[in-house]
Length: 470
Image: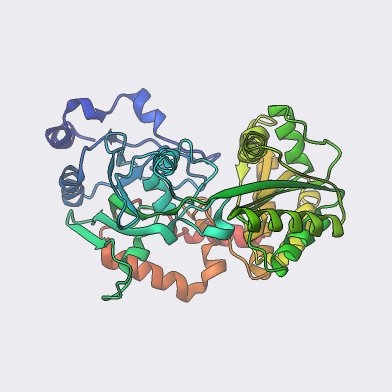
């Protein structure tokens, strides 16, 4: 980027908020996605909405790509600057602006860590349910841009269900305010929902108001182990069919159990083929009844051993083990590719079996865990990006996993987003007409294609390659 352009940005945010050394640019050339990397031209840290609007106006005038970035935990290469340009960081916009006890809302800047929001509102007797596994480091702006889910998604929904209002800087630098603290609002198109999950391709979200709910009085956690993945999957369907909606109904296969136990030493049985983690919250009587019934259903469906956590500390250890699944698996081989194929709950057993068969077919190592209660499975491929032949087999395996998920009525992503990595598969899910509608929206809002370009929409050549491989 020319000195002249850099000076324009420095005049807005100050020299101390601009990074352009080769080491700094390299640090922001990748996110948590394996095998995707590209350096930006400049990295800047604005302090408020007005500064971002000024930055965007310069980028619009100079046709400079803009990539919004939080903590870089994206798993679909969504924050990789694949066309260079400008990375906008939110490390200077990390304040909780308001807690409104009367309207049960909290207003925050996009750089606030998700866990900090949860802790803050719980200290005030309230509850923000969305809890992505990366919540200790991921930012709320990233969660909104990706419409992140989490372990509690089965009962409480995902990020979009809690966004009440937002401020957005559009690609021309104009500031748009959407939503509010009101309970009802059907004035015009639901524009706010358009920006939630848009992955930074339509604008930059600079302020967010979230809905809160009362903190549940009680919660209990149970666990069940199985000798077959199918028995565990059938248990999930049986629990839901019994009209129980748990807070959490999580799944780990044998490979994941072994990796977590090796990592954390919490006493998980290494001979189990699968584990289900169950949690319920609410009033004490209902919680006790539901957790006991879920344990009974697990035993009726072949659970070899079951237990209910005897304390909050024990429950937290079990949940931490599940949250650490990716970190534990990542220690096994040089490259870890985490996916999130999602199917209807009734198809979980078929999907789990298909993943096993695909791993054997392509001779790749895949461990599976995930949010079994809402059908969101995370097949995790352990590989080595330096082995080109193996990486080709990995790509073929993942393409077939997405293909099977769609055939079962599912989708290519339940919470990680499309980004660049999954762009080749989006048309499989939406069809040509769906892609054309999305492109029309993108063109009307961002005609110069400066907002996170190269994401969502695959290049035609790569699309054909992946279809042939699949």
